[in-house]
Image 1 (tube, rainbow, N blue to C red):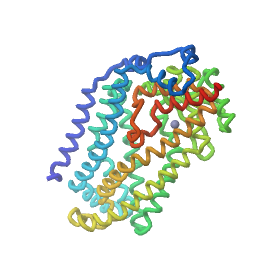
Image 2: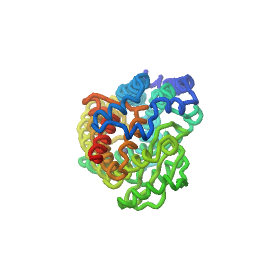
Image 3: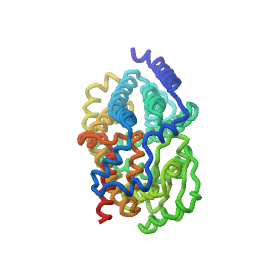
Image 4: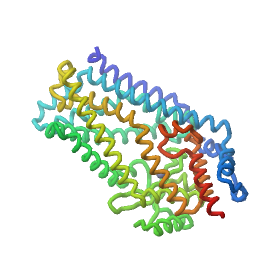
Length: 438
Ligand SMILES: [Zn+2]
């Protein structure tokens, strides 16, 4: 049944994606809408804030209008359901690919063309990721295009979005296909220990991606150029120098073509460092807000968060691979013959592998979020001491409430937030300010 319906299903998925994207409520005045979310305030307003950190935080929170709060809460809470929807759709797509027998057909073709095991793995893995991406594409179109426009958070036209999707999909299909074929090579060569080496290999490949990403991948989406405004650049470089960062330039990039979100990063591993900020931060924020944000980003670099996160992610993956090792062997023994899977080291078992991995990562969401959120809290503490811009930090966080729920419940934050909530971050800034005013 699924065998016959596979190609019509792929076609239907593409048509549906196209229809979803076509019906998106595209508007071009997202910038105007974003700036209307928060009522502006002057330096005099900041100076007159109450000394009590909680009262000052409340004064900041009052500047978010009820309509806008409701809108950004709805946007953020919808993300919880999207997390579930993505996992379920991914598992469903794995089931369709398994039932369709398409991977068996790729295996037969690959074995006719070459006798190299790795090339068999590579063609099956790449084919698998390709079909998985196509079957999930309607949700991708809804999530990354329709919904972003619905909430006035995207500046991309349909063609620009499609072009970006084509580039990012090509990169992810090729890199994931390559990664999975290496994992299966490990399962074939070291069937008892593949999970340990697999975790090490994953960290290694992620490090390479982090090293090459800023140089080769980021410029495919945005233009980077040295920041010319000395009044902005000099204070940032001063914070960097004071904290031992080996950088002598700051770069800006044109993220406003995608959205109005403010963002920056200090990237680089193995001794390299590049300080980069987007044009939204430059155009929508005051110098004190820019310094606060850059202090935070410099904090990530100085506190070696990249290495710590890689290590933590490696551990999560290690436990995930141990779980998959057990359950994949069992599943292939139980259902393998029915689906023409020779052994659990046969990459045709990928639908099982990926379905279990997605379920595992879904369950690990609160753990991953808590690891990242902890690093973000550390970077906040570092940043405010480095930049000494408490109100700048509060103002920048207020802007983040355009798309982040400002005041979630305790468990909600624990499960779904990969950054502390804006209210908590504003409170931290006001607490710092109160202690430094004494
Ligand atoms: Zn951060």
